[in-house]
Image (cartoon, helix red, strand yellow):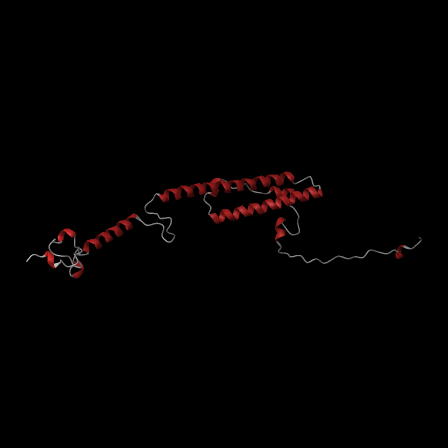
Amino acid sequence: MNIDKSETPQPANYKPKVKVDPNHGLWDFFYAKDKLMLTPDESAEHGRGWTVEELRHKSWDDLHKLWWVCVKEQNRLSTARKERRRLKLAEGGSQGGERWDEVRKTMKSIRHVLTERWYLWEDARTLAETDPEIDLSNVRRPFVPKDYLEAHESALEGDKQDQPAEQAPSGFMAEESRVTRPEDIEPSIPSPGSPETPQSSIKG
């Protein structure tokens, strides 16, 4: 068909408006919202991993936070590696691999320190079970010093010595119950409740 270019239909310039949450958690898979990955020079700028000796001085909360920082960094490095493969970029892979190795060293050191603390805790718990000053079943006060125990025991012994000796009970309750035995009864005297002796058997 012979038509002028001005008469050719043009595609509609339609761009759907998609609402995106700027604070969505998936943005943490990238180093920046407007940057999918780091450049090779930026990826090479990283420090070394934490050593076991350094992490031994950290608290449980610090180790917990550092572990999840490493997990977050691993997710970012994995995302950048996927993007490089998708875009077929040759540069940046070796720098990202070095950064990955340092993150893994830190995570291994954290696990090493936590394993040491677990064994130390088990040894302390086993030792506490044989310590007379420690009662693990008492949640409110598991530790009682030895001098406190000795003072408490001596106070109890002093209270026992101050108490008067027990006296034998007197009165009605002190009388022993009298039990009539067969040998205590004379044969010539009839026992209560027995039939009276016949008159014929009594000699006058």
